[in-house]
Image (cartoon, rainbow, N blue to C red; front, side):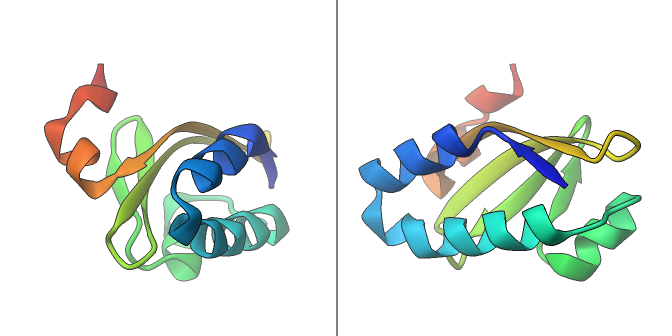
Length: 95
């Protein structure tokens, strides 16, 4: 899969250094994946959830959330937002 944008991952890792390793793992797994459906995503990340139109990934043992939009046919993953669990709970990312 092609991941857009690594810059968001890098910047979030600078703000939250303990998120760097789990975000790097997510990036490596995602970049090497060949997902055709949400079921394939769940095989790679069993805690991923579908919140239409996004897929939400649990990062760092429930401490962070990565919200992505995936175009399976084009094999592109757009990172829409990365936030703490607390920020995610507020729901502002849904707008």
